[in-house]
Amino acid sequence: MFFVSFICFLVKILRFSYKIITLSCKMRVIQNKLDEVEEAAKAAAMASCEITITSPQEANTKSSLIVVSNRLPFVLKRDPITGKLSRHASAGGLVTAVAPVVIKGHGLWVGWSGITLEKTDEIPESDPKDCTPTAGLLSEQVVSVNVEPVLFDSYYNGCCNETFWPLFHSMPG
Image 1: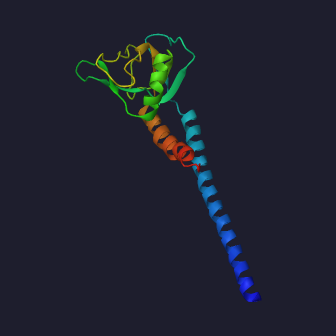
Image 2: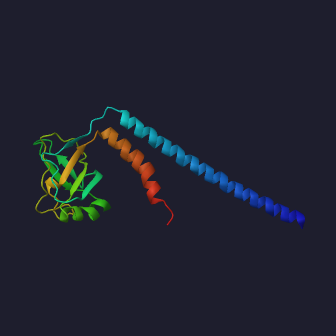
Image 3: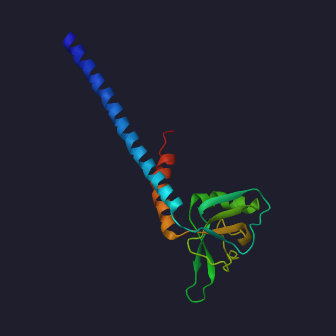
C-alpha cells in the first residue's frame, strides 16, 4: 500500500513539474516575441524614415473625437492615366462600427491611405451613390499619413498580427 501511495505521489510531482516546465516554455516564447518586437521598434525608431502628414487643409474638426488607426476607413486608388484619386470601400469591423460615430460627431480620422500621397493631393469626397459606412465622411475629416510600405509591412504583419492580435484576442474569458 505504501508503494502505491508513493507512486501516486511521484506522479503528482511529475505532473506539477510538467506544468511548470510547460508554463516556463510558454513564457520564454512570449518573452522572445516581446524582445523581437522591442528590437523592431528600436530599429524603426533609429531608421531614417520620414512620416509626413499630407492634408491640403489644417486638421479641422468640431469635435474632440480623433480616431488614429493604421489605415484610413477607405482605400484610395490613383488612376494611372489621369492621376486622379478615388475612394473605395474598405472592409472591416472597426470601420463599420466607428465611422458613423466619427461622421455624426464631426470627428477626425487619421491613418495611412495605402498609397503615397503628394502634398498637392486632395482626398476626394465620397461618391453620392456610396452606401458604405464611410459615405458621409467628409474629406476634411480625414488626415492621411504617408508611411513607407516596408515600414508599414513590418509594423502591421510583424508587430500587430504576430503579437498584438494574439495577445488581445486569445485571452481566456
